[in-house]
Length: 303
Image (tube, rainbow, N blue to C red; front, side, top):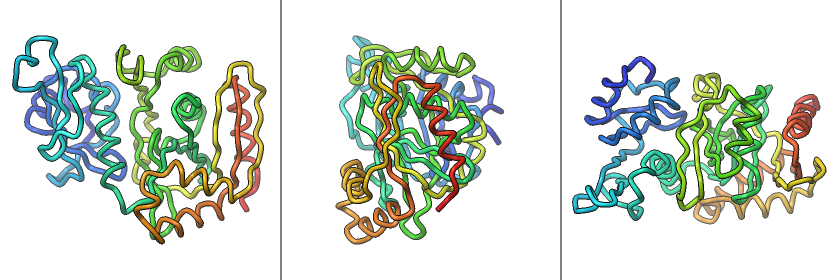
């Protein structure tokens, strides 16, 4: 049963009781009475399945604080298992807070994976991991790729399984910030976006709905073939340059949430990832040229 099978009033009623939602590798239990959260879920999560049982990996609640802030300059709290990991945010930021909070839940608790701060997309059975700091154009590139035939596994968290090295799928709405929002709206006019929210800790933000194919294949892992470090620079020449494996290892380790915590398991998982992937630096300024570079990659034979 898909979330889209619920009418808006049914969705609101279900969220008040608690909604069990399958998001790729994880089941999330979401409880809230906030209309903006219900609207965002109905808009961007329509293709996701409602979990058929009452087990959840993460139980989260979004609600106003129980003080005057409920009415005066109203705020919203994110609760995880009854605890408050974050300070309250303005009420208007409730839906982005849900998305940021779910990322926090996974990055702080899913230690059965080597977790890398990176987008990851797949085409033809091979995945491209895109590690990059904020402002590098990672999410912009990811949003363009998944509207040009690539499957989204994740916009923020690459989850490497420790037992076999496969990348777990965790497709959720793509987070875009500031100028990237209009760039993708122009590049993909048919894309579905949440309402724009201004003045957040990340600037102006909006979330883009992932493709139906990405969501439907949310239980399908992928094998890494490329690790690509993107960098958007205005006016930059589109350039893909291979880098040594040792350098790629250190840079991916620096972008990992739990490499040090996993010890030998983390080292072995990352070493296996590097051994089976080509690593590149990638600079770009034009999305059409970037799409061509990635399409050319898929034409190369797998080693």
